[in-house]
Image (tube, rainbow, N blue to C red; front, side, top):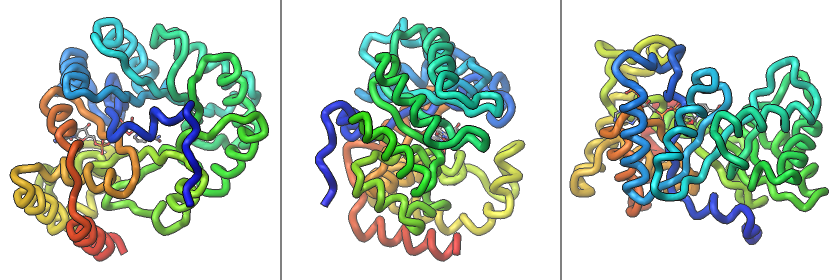
Length: 311
Ligand SMILES: NC(=O)c1ccc[n+]([C@@H]2O[C@H](COP(=O)([O-])OP(=O)(O)OC[C@H]3O[C@@H](n4cnc5c(N)ncnc54)[C@H](OP(=O)(O)O)[C@@H]3O)[C@@H](O)[C@H]2O)c1
């Protein structure tokens, strides 16, 4: 049986969806400045809030700090409270627990906040032992700089090690943010999802649209640009039946889009998806993925097709 979720991290379990802010200011993967501007992402942020949603995920490394700075500016103009998550990047020279707190303080400066709601280790450091980065999270939490702490891209075993360190101090491990969508269901198969359920850790599903692929707008003759084209190019031909199924389920549900169905599938699996949005249209559409659920048969049909495509 799943344990009772401690009050201090319940806010994460109450969220159905978040807004991913990786593309805000990022030129390397998302071509920031080409086709979307600061004004566009702020419009997306505002629409997201207008839909009654308020969980935003950023990281110090997104746009080399620009994503956090933009979010900090948008927060000042926001009329409702926003739940802010950011992440520590384990650069090779960051090997002490103090480096976690120092990095968080710089994030807080960019965000112009006194504390964040969730501070996450972006991925396990190759040079800092897992236990030491966990001690860094303990420090951040004890200093009141992070309301809750989590990890990202941690395997079942790595996550367990962080959980154990935090437990010694009575601090719950709030979340593990991992890649999860219909084209990557490894956490269902390697036991991570089950372990999270057993320990009461919220799974935050990143890239729930497989970086835009599951919207159905990319095809072999219209691949996404840059890094995404090379990561997913070979899959584009094979995913057509899946994007068609997403679209047809959406139609059966009275006009939901493929993107909304793909995001809702993550919610149905018990995760908290955080789709990225570059503008108001995308944010509005993604906000429409909440407040309803796919049927069990629809989830099963998507599971079966995703298995056939990815196996
Ligand atoms: N912890 C980690 O290591 C990690 C790694 C990756 C992501 N993340 C987090 O997860 C968030 C989401 O992941 P992601 O940004 O990689 O991918 P995603 O959410 O799967 O896809 C986002 C992209 O899809 C397109 N899109 C979004 N909504 C759309 C809509 N309704 N209609 C059409 N196109 C739409 C946009 O790009 P185009 O318009 O250019 O297609 C958008 O930037 C990130 O922002 C970040 O916060 C974390």
